[in-house]
Length: 360
Length: 252
Image (tube, rainbow over all chains, first blue to last red; front, side, top):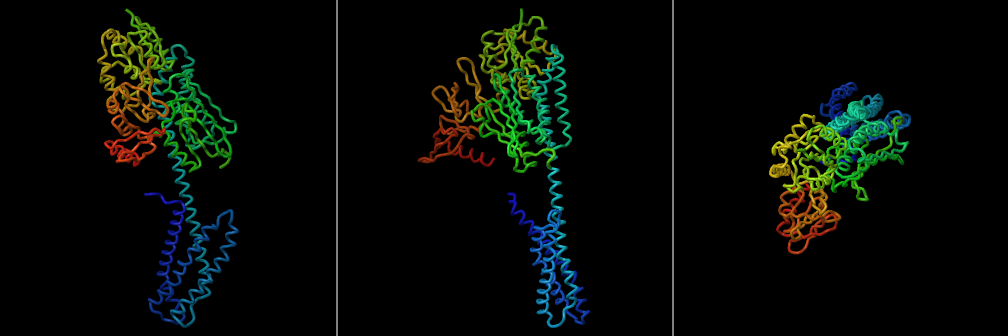
């Protein structure tokens, strides 16, 4: 089933609210039937049950007719912080006018039904009617708050899932047999004639595994921190492949504090090494560039391999990356993977909205 | 008698490690070290070693490509080396080929050397043929090996948009060039992934991912337009299969 468009969804929500209101008013009409009979009995008139029910229904179903206006006003002008005064300035006169108008209309209809005679309790009813208007406003505010809270909860849960998935991806990469066993083999080789280098490589492997486990549940980290992690990974690869692998990291100073999704660069750089560098004989460069302009952080990862096949058959890593971008930025972030224009290698371009630690 | 060994691995430290270990073994002499498959092919032809320690995963031509491209009687005893490759390991086991898993220990290497020494000089072509058959069987071709006068190179199947037969050869057409392979079209058709490559004519197979459009012609025939702009006639016999394949791809 296709998901309804945004506007359609809001229309559906509004209709749903109105139906709930209509249900409440009808229930009230039934409940208040005995009360109405009592009111008329007090003024000395005995009415039949059907008449009394009709009077009660007229009273409450008029609210069903009027409530779309109230729901609309309450939705547009919520009684919350920034525009509370403005909202009160509209709702107070609106409530009085609507209550008065409603009572006049009600009186006219009821009079035609049980004519003639004085209607019970006309003035006392004005207060009750105004109160019902405010009850609707309050109900709308309550429902809105609940919806916002629910959405926030859902989003938090979603971000948590995506982060966990990224963490698993990163671990999968580190425990990838080719990476892990080749790294162990390299350490074993270094151990014989360069104990210092073997020691460094062991420490790097340890650090890589540890930092992946210790993301502390933060969905985003400053780019500088993400690069720290990446440098450890690349240092290991550098030791393995030696001068054949050339790594160029070029990050503008103003990008370092910008938040990026935790471990976002891992699958992208891994692809560049696995499908670009390591399948091409001879020296190869993997370059990582970060620049930010006009509210967008752009990170390019380029290799000099055979280029991305068109159409690209995307692996799990890239698909997960995209779903994380959607969870964090909706349509504000993007990842494009394609062959470089000069035909030499693949370019992965990540565009993210600029957010920093201080700004929410 | 010394065993003349060739070391093939793309990682310098891994080569160094193997060199150190082999130097410590009596009766083994390293004749050369290579960092990719192309260099290995060349070294085997030039130096005719007794044994080759061959890494499976390498840039360009991988370990299996090297075996496939060597003439069976010119191939030395082979000890495969891999970090981990379930598929390859199964093939090694099935064909009784010797292999080492990284990182391997000295004792395991000594066993491999002893076995290789026993094999050296005997004809192991049949064993290697059996290994290659196991490796290639069951999984669709991922790259084509193109032999040249000087050596060979690999072309990824996803980069090939059409395969057309031309006399005794077939032409692999990529976006910007053609590669010649001496193999009948029907043999290639059997080896490629049938959901990706479809026959459209007696003498042509196309990559469905590379089809840009179809142009209808007379008598129910039509032309297939490829991403590069190249047009190929699709004969009536094969039209139905092609359309079914395109439909499947759309719904996938």
